[in-house]
Length: 375
Image (cartoon, rainbow, N blue to C red):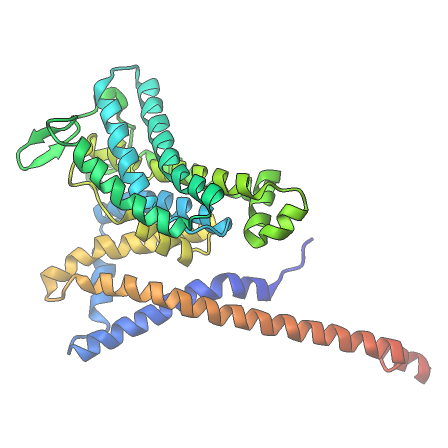
């Protein structure tokens, strides 16, 4: 049986736990400075989230956040900073909605077509940054930020009534997807409906873990992210891995809009949420790129988003939740650095203890040798 490693558990959980504690503490300081209770807002949000319908909203929101964070995490494991998830997701959702609204197919085929289109568009948009990096050495940070802006303009152009969009009141949409393209949900009576895509998001997390930890491709990807020169020396094509990682990251980003598109809205409009990719970065960092950690981070951020609605009705600004999210981002950086330094000190202590034990055994001062001498 594998020996339980207490230090490894501390390193895994210490960063996120410390980040949340620091974020709560800093947010409480802000509340106290503004003359507000540092405890009541959290109690109000917890009480509000105890309602079953709010819990359904939190789970549904978490599914979208989870897929966006997975897309970011794939890049992180390759030492790539894919900031373009937001543009990839919105462009993919809009094109998939256009295709879904323009065809009529049997249910499973219709849904499959929409998903394939979304993944291909997301992969294509992320692949541009991958090609620029592998052929011209352009930083993916710069290229993906620029591609986000371009995607916003492309979406705004294509959704115009003169192009492919439709005017509905003060809103612009791509037209409604026929019911054959709706993803079936999980009915919970008065509590509402959980998106069926929540299950797909969970399966994506399982697949992410299996590929990274149980396949040669996953090993090559992690090895290239850890040290590109060492990976090249071992026969890994680093440029191909960079491009492949960006394509996969973009494909998963393309799925991030599917819970909303196929489970609720059934059309792409100007109301589609923006900034999803940047929230995914926060969650991926908070979850340390692990599928379980990302799931917990997605639920936490979704809780802050949905439960903060009650603050307005109780004399508090709902922006308190946004402040806390910002504090979490800052606290993540600080706490992970503190945990990293703790881990480094522990490793140095262990090495020192092992060297001391080996030296004692060699010069005859070890406990075993002392017993033999006394005998």
